Length: 254
Image (cartoon, rainbow, N blue to C red; front, side, top):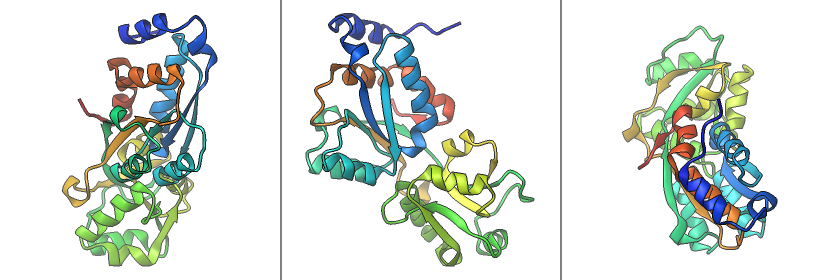
């Protein structure tokens, strides 16, 4: 049985000009780690009479740069505060619309078929698990998951062990895919990414105090004049929209 839409969504759709929301497509630029949950929320929004939602996924800073360069977008969802801060400073998002919607956890993953089930976050254990292989994560200078990973590995005294074996990608889902295909011995991703990929398993969870808090700020872009985008953003903040993220394992920030 299909879930009933939220009262908020129903009200927004009722107040819009007839057919307007359904006709004007919403364009969202979103961190790659949001894909599974955000795809589900967008499909549900559209199924209940909302506009079609087109989502471009990638690394948060790269997406911010595209928006700043003029790429058309209505909503920006970042996996870190820094990328959204840059967007706000550049004037490409509406600062008054900014909301920290979600949190996440950083985990170490291995292929499902790997012999290890749990791994101590200690130099000898980590070096043994990597062996002659690779540890993959996002680009440590520009991709949020890579920045969180480097901060945590440095704090735990593991960076020198990992650095010679490090492979970096443009976003977290690409890193996830490398581990899922067995092309990397280990990977550092978010807990929600690991939950979305049955071909990997979590072998360790990084302490929350070993890296900056993982927060996902959302904001409407400064150039968007699409009323449907505001309706979709309101839906994402509603209990119905937040439920998609909670089911994927995100921490939903009140």
